[in-house]
Length: 208
Image (tube, rainbow, N blue to C red; front, top):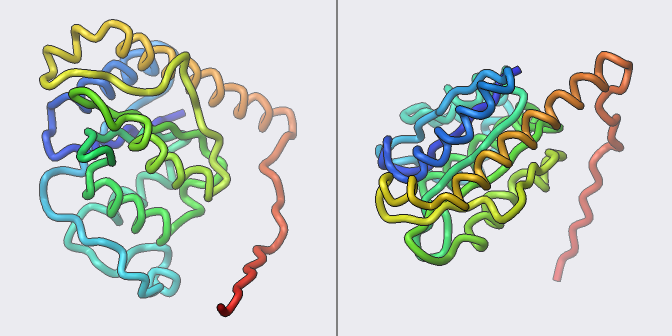
């Protein structure tokens, strides 16, 4: 089993990376392979709603960034942790654009796989940021993994994050819950419990 941990910060080894690394350590101890995927600091094109991905094999037609590479890795992953710094009480714009395009181009790569959002902040704006990221999961049949508190760490530098003992414990508990849920899903699959077969999607559109 493998969990992809997505660093939505332009700072490759900053506060968000520190929190994700704490999660990765526990997952590895629980026998879950991990990879931290760096969204990076380069510009990420926003989704323009062209729908060309539906005719492009579940890949975005814009190829100048790492969205399609991530989609291919997501197909092989069993779970996800998406991490972001907090900017003006919301996640990083690059992460939201990255997720919008990846989820819209290939929702099947993520459906029914457990996921969680974590954020790092100097002080505030955390719960609104977690909520914005989590909405991608709840529109796509993904179990949301929780911890014993909201999934956040506080600090302005990686060293300060290391001093947030409660925040790091929340990250460890989140990792343990992710490992437990993944193993429960695998045990269910072995015993014949398959994914739900959903109804064909209904769209109700009103002209106002």
